[in-house]
Amino acid sequence: MSSQDLVNAYLEVTKSPDWQAQPPAETADISDSQINEVKNAAGGDAAYGNMVKWAGANLDAKSIEAFDQIVNTGTLDAIRFAVQGLKSQYDAANGVEGAMVQGKAAPNKGDTFRSQAELVQAMNDRRYDNDPAYRQDVIEKLDRSDLSF
Image (cartoon, rainbow, N blue to C red; front, side, top):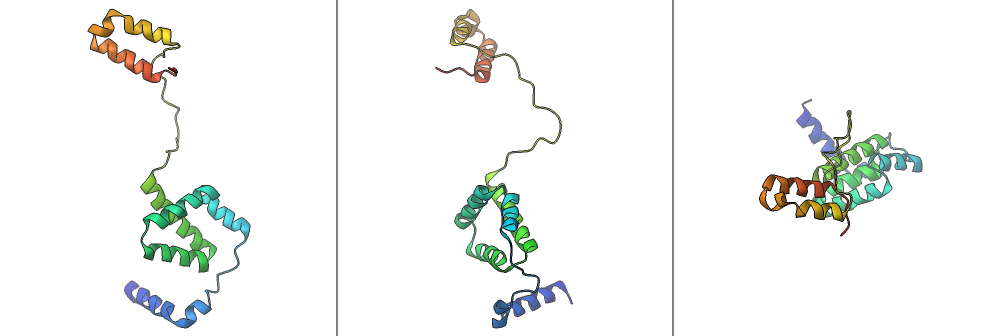
């Protein structure tokens, strides 16, 4: 049987009225700990909630219906797979913080201003008005500094 024939046969079977009345034999009650495990794989309860809320606002009705059907009637493995797929879409749309695989953080590129007085002194230097390179150095040093004005 070709893959297209297999898909067509599956769709025909799922259209029958008896299909919803008898869930697959592998479907079992899912415990609270298993639900938490699935949610933790998505980043925790709050992250899972954000992801589902995003999906409701950004995915088409067919995709939402397919996800809901898997979550409501699928096996634990099917639910995990659906949540991973939704998380991938969510991460692609919203971006994720990259994880450092190896190495170390980039070194600090130079010093910083420790006070506003040091900044004022650097800006009062004659080079600040006349030398664009010096002025750029002062600006970059200010960007690295943690000063409150």
